[in-house]
Length: 287
Image 1 (cartoon, rainbow, N blue to C red):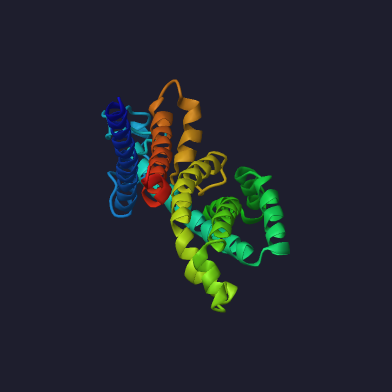
Image 2: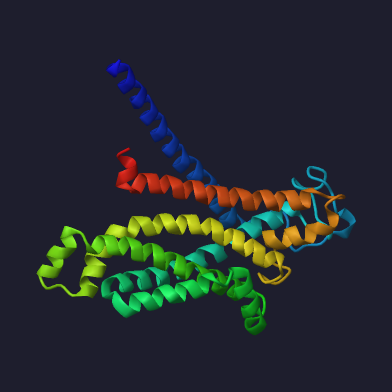
């Protein structure tokens, strides 16, 4: 009986490992495809995305262009390609800024504790109380809609996310034997944080950044939908969805295609983040 149970457990473990690898492979494939499309749009699109051809407006897919045209006769495929670059570039910059500032704050709070840690947590609570959409609306009143507004709004929301994740991981690292040994040797808190704590929590930061990229793309789409993203005529997936509302019955592909692009992007980054977590987390790898 025991050998049968052991065999079943081994089969389940192999299936779990295969599932974890599939997450990484599928996520990397989807994200890689999106990055390739975004980079390709910088040098080539089927038609200029801002070119209007009123005579060919609202053409369905495969009748004029691969994915049809919108209400102004613009090529939908070209707009989706350029929108991919706009969405990914804003998301990557915002997550990089928010992740860097949040990680620095979290590591510093773990090193110095006390009042600094309490202050950081209260600031995070205040930022969490303001959704990124509301933050962008307030910033738009001062800066006006545009790329900078979207980046600042998303990055501001990302800072407390990374601060809390980094703080929790760093506090665990500070209790490890290698940190205690470094303190016994007389290393400063700054040196310990940079040389010993940060390298050992970097995998968690990378996984968190990958997952947050999907959320950043979704947030950017929401900002563009509300008119707080890039100014026209720069195409964005969110504005394409907003413009398609009037034509849902006549041209449903105008809403379906950018919606699928957003969903695929979020799915790809989530799958990639799950795969990286399983790969980089030794506790997951040993299961």
